[in-house]
Amino acid sequence: MLASDVWVLAAPTYWGGLAGKMKDFFDCMRQRLVRFDHTGATHPDRFKDKHYLSITDCYTGAFENWVTGVTDQSFRTIDKVMTAAGVIKVHELVLTNTWGLKELPETKKQTCLKWGRRLNSVKKRDDSTLKRYIELFFMIAFMALLTMGIQFGFKLVPSQGFWLRYISFVVIFYVLLACILHFFTVVKHRRR
Image: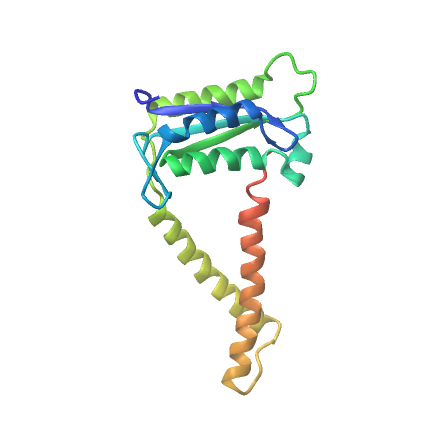
């Protein structure tokens, strides 16, 4: 594990959670993945800044998994452990409809091959905090513009009074913000 640049962590999803064997592996590796300080808090140790790709499968269909998020908890568990260890996520893959499956479908083989080539050729990304801040800035700027468009387009701007205009803007802005955050945190992250 110390010698490899990228880890591929693969385990099935059982009952909406990570398979017990992988969880046992993470539990056994805890003292190696993180170090503990005098208060019991964990800190990344020797594996910090390595990269990982996570894979899981489930019996549900692609649409059902997307709607209900059956595999979400498996990926969250892997992500939680790897984040504590300071390991950076490259991507995640999911295979659905696995009941009675004897051979990997050609489309999934091609996806795995594509990611295998990328892992060997593409520079691994490090912390993308700056990228997220830039995305957040543009998202908020766009939402403010959209809010003003809604106010003026639907004539929701009171003709008099700064505070009425301000309250109207804030209410519309936060409704839009809630919709976008819901999309990015729930809908977009549903695995197919």
